[in-house]
Image (cartoon, rainbow, N blue to C red):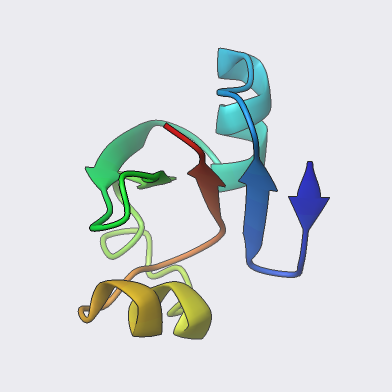
Length: 72
């Protein structure tokens, strides 16, 4: 596991409770162009979570709150 303030990286998918703790609740999975998976809070925008600048740059559209990136 490698972590920064807004993105946590995993080599394998972590357990559900770890994912929910990091993203702050229910999550959705976004496939990335490099075959990794980005897991984000599914209500991040509704909950008015801060924009995750690094994840937004990676995806090319707004991503909110903390995210996980998992090798697929």
